[in-house]
Image (cartoon, rainbow, N blue to C red):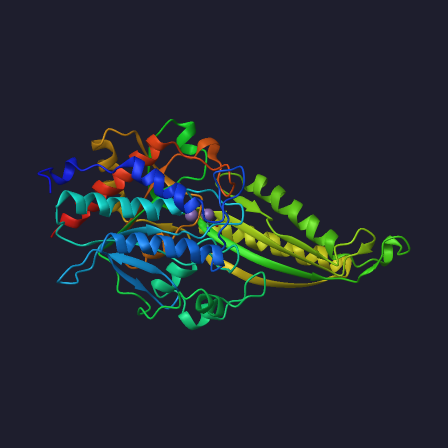
Length: 417
Ligand code: HGY
Ligand code: MN
Ligand code: MN
């Protein structure tokens, strides 16, 4: 018990760095700081079990819902809606140790700091991790938080097939995280997500804290092209129906279009598979994904339309059939003005340089924003690198972000209490 005032509380950075390292030890990527824990794999289960054990160490009430989201809440006789933080602990296959993990482990650190001080906030604090935020194995991304807020039924989510043919509900059951918590969940009082920026902005401007204003729109499409498998040596070019050429031309078109649209527009062809993928066989099929994003929904829709037109025209010319499947489509999201202002004011009062900025990446906060006042705190990514095992953020910046999270949550807990 201490007689420290709430506003004087500060996190223990060594404890936070230690937890980040311990979690990154689960399915580490040799020779790097990174780790590979695709959603609902055994590695994800091991990470989940470790974080749940830390929640129990803090005597939190741990709830697991029907999509495997896990929330640890400080016991509260009145069961009032908590001030919640959190993020995700699933990673892409070439993940860093901070993407998602920071928001969850800093949340545990915040709660441990408050408990140790003997201070009882006017509202309970909670920290959660959401299932399948990355969407790399099962699409769409932010799936767990989407179901949490009622944006998709848990039944529909359970039926989603992964890129490896696994079925999401069966995988949840297999790793013993098919919980019984109600969905949609009852909304928290407010939600704040601490996350590494994953881009170059804060570092370039030598700013420590990003007060995130919202998340740009996201469009993911899977394209399956079917042509005619044939001999690479004997088949005249005029007789070919080559789906690979259509895929490559479309990927090049995506890049040219994005450059033409400029501004915030980004476009990526991240996954491509040819079948049978052999040196001397004109492919039978080509399957690839298109990721388009923009802060302006109209521009994003224009980009989607132009890519689709190019794809279909090119496929027709080549005599190749096209099937497309929407993997994810989320409009741009604006966070709560009051919570953004609170993050910015808290950061400034702690003496950190601060910048308001949109998020290029998707986050669980964009789903929680549908049901409660929500915002995010960014800290710099070294070299702007992420979704790469080389992802890094300095301990000083981690500490700054976690203290802004701590103080913002404490202020939300007293807001109107
Ligand atoms: O794709 C994203 O923006 C996030 O990493 N799921
Ligand atoms: Mn993330
Ligand atoms: Mn990510």
